[in-house]
Length: 292
Image (cartoon, rainbow, N blue to C red; front, side, top):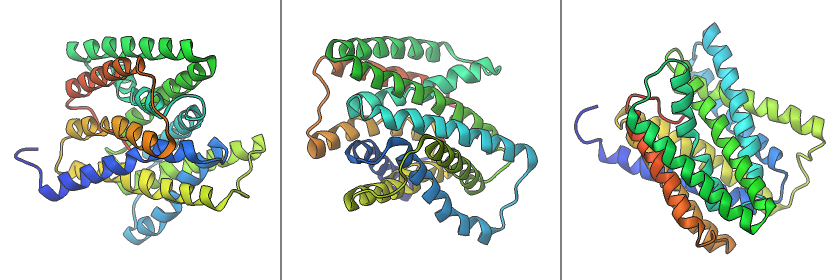
């Protein structure tokens, strides 16, 4: 893409970053079960998208449908680990660790035969050091915080699978069609897990329903969907780099709204993790951007 992106799309990208930044603090403040939050977030978003897909008479193809379902399963695993992590560790640590999905996507792409530039390997090494430092700080705090870190890291891994799978799907399906299938599969899978595990899907306080609604609108329908939309004029590399700003913004929102701040010793580790992720993303300039 040549030239400067339209001002409107840059504004939409900034809006998407701000909306996505609200997700971790909203989740941390919601008393509903983590898996139920994930179900309502994706299931409600799929229902909102369904009329648009029917109106546009989107076409679906066999292989792309199966890959979309696989992406939905990866997304369910992503939310099923990332969202619970916010109950154990800080918003800042969880948000930073889950951003490692870009690094996991690069490594998985390399395993599938894609070339991984030297700069990306350097970024992966920097990320690894950052992860070790963050978990080291949290070990000193409590094993509970360390467990949250591991969940967030797993969330990043499953997010990487989701990104790579989505990159293959979107060669054959529109973003809208893919998003509906992926969200729908994710929501149904999480619904089954909630029912089997006896997770309550209702009976929450009005404030929690309001937070789940805000999470669906800001995090799911606006935040990440805007990232996909602006790819029409902004390179995937710039969009992916922009999403890293959600980490400090989420930390600031959590500090103001929840009184939650990361330990001072964790700040250099968070900076290393984000810097390494930025190196990987910038090295993978031809890689698909993060999907919704």
